[in-house]
Image (tube, rainbow, N blue to C red; front, top):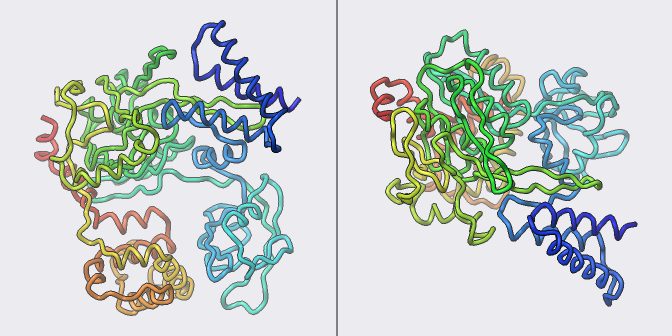
Length: 529
């Protein structure tokens, strides 16, 4: 039974990745079956048959493209969770500090907040099991706290200022994973929305964000897709549909065995007029490139930043009975102007993923003149007729070099050692009551809170505790960046991720350029000529 089940998985894989005649297929299957039987029956040592088949499947897919992959049953759930947009659990953001599980923030409206669990609480026992001082890991916390909706978990908590341990019974519930991480007014006329990935609920979050900002009567929009590695095609299409006129082509897919499929704008969108800037960088891929490519091809707005990753391949999942799956590339994405923005992968998977390092070494991230496109891949935008290129990502209309002026080895080491996050968690935990009293809202915090010398001293001391020796010269290089990040991290802990971006964005050159362009009718129209 096990033999048939395992070999069937390999045969199905062969069927999916090939298109061959029945006669040739029979010969290939016979070879595959015979090899498996020989190893299972005659090999000198014992073998894991399941592992053997999985390695054979991985080998077949490895010869195709970097995005056709086999995913084991254990990995499927973890892979899908960020895109499914939710999980079931108790609803806390946590960190492990000094071998103790600390609540950074309860999810607003989640089951933990409803029973009274607060930021700064230490969880010392879960369902009667001691979890303090035992070397607990993140994976252990997930196993303890996540579970089916409606089930209960018993938490014992140590709270600052309370002498006795506190006991809470939390009923697990559906916990949302937000992909729209920030939405605020960058200026009185310009709205800013940050999307971290394209998940099942991203479109609904995006619409909610725009409608929530409507009272400000914004005239311009900055859509930040930097570092957004993609996600669901439908989410990208639905979002760009809110930006581009009805009946216009947004993207199409096509492959050797997949007919051309077009996706059009189908309704009147929330922001079809007004200046629009899409921020991208080398971490923007797939669905992010669909959105930015459509905006660029229809001359609907300007793309600002650095060349995107270059992932234009469409994957379709094929499930096996044991819960594992194959994600097989079946087609390519094409922008409205006909561009395929998939970068080359003929030199293998390692070269494909190292291509971003090559961009840095070749100077592309700091100098626009280092970027060269094949004239054969030249296209024209649909309205104005501007020149754009296919074959390797979306090239922005306005290039902004990566800013390394505030980089130093010392500050890098502080971050890498965990000193920055640990110091902020301790500082907010020690001073939460006073901080909430002094800064009841973000506006007050932004205007009145300063990163003072004592806070910097705490960071330096925390670094020294982790063997990161203070370097005064390098600290001065990174001071502006460090102080901005410290303030932003405190804002995140006191308020939400949206306030983090609101606090940190002003030191970003790309963000500043986006605001400058989107608010200037002259500069904006000049780039769209």
